[in-house]
Length: 142
Image (cartoon, rainbow, N blue to C red; front, side, top):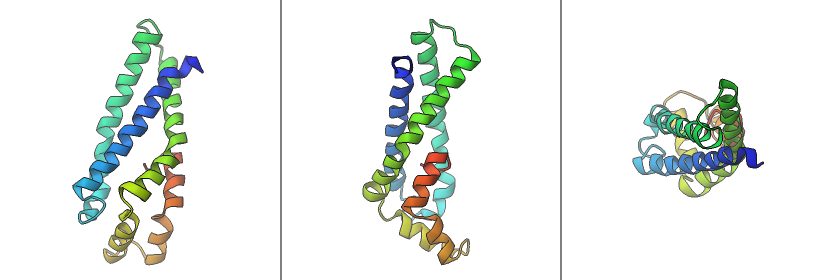
């Protein structure tokens, strides 16, 4: 376990930054009045996500591996971070949808139906806590 302490730390940091991003999205109105922009703007999270992975892998290389890292070592470190994030993601979904943005699901369902993108039944099947928890574990959503 000690071997992967840095990956655990960075997985937890990634989780925390993801929650802060959800707060940011909500404050920006992307879970409410600007729900139509959410699908585009949420993708900007890739910027801090990539930065976090770069910093994490550099730290692993410089502090744990003496300044040299093979591709395989970097890949394994990245996978371990992703696994930590996947394990924590259901908790992140609960926190997000119960406390940060409880209005998100009703808003996105209404928007999807009113804009003609989905039927009511399809929107309710896709936009709910159970669906989002499953999606977050397999990497489609946080």
